[in-house]
Image (cartoon, rainbow, N blue to C red; front, side, top):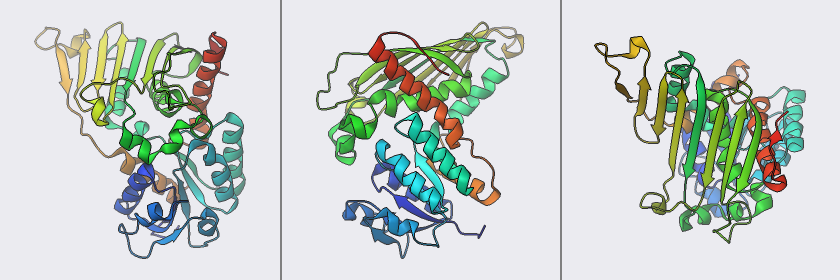
Length: 344
């Protein structure tokens, strides 16, 4: 593979901008900026020289100089564009979720496999130093065998968020609501830390954000194959002094028979362990672990470029990220049926 990877950014909204900045930082060349709103595509032109602007993604796919495409589109458009990109022989980075359905996900996976191109999902939580450190502690048995994991995503749909993502209010375009957009992240964190999920029982709270067709608040109770249980709370109506400004609050807690780990975004990891080697002068203490807050967008894109150059399978390959999508879709089935749904 040539030294400089040439990329087409398809979808130049908030995510497209973050990805484009990361590609530039990683030494890639952005040769196409694609968006149905031309001014939005043109907004990337200041990142590098000679970026081609178009409203038709097929023009980028027809360019033999393009090595890879980065799909940052509404969820229901991921599959058709990704399949076309694979057929054109382009490597693919696709924003989460992988697709709007398992059928579409499988189409993407098969198309990439058939042409021998990389299909990676931009699931940045897998590259977070915070979650990687928590995973390390759990694997080392610092809190013993995990029994309970709890994740809460507190957000509020402010005007600026919706101005950048107006499609998000449409259930079809978003392939659901908060359980899809946020839950797909958090189910993946659960899988990363605890293991595979066996079943999910989910409930949708009464709708309070009436402009949104999909769920604005939903809760899931998760059963893992190893017996651990999980509780997931996803909400776009949790308004306070922090979320009202547009910021999200993410909290995580894992409890085991020897202690607990808790994390709140932007703060240190708090670790309590009764294990002998974790004591200080024989006393049980709470440890405060500071972890560098690195740019996870850059880390995931750096990994994508590495996989293109080496042929390695991405950590967040299409096949691996089919699983959290399956869990999210099972959660929606549970909301409809009122019963737990098994994940195959």
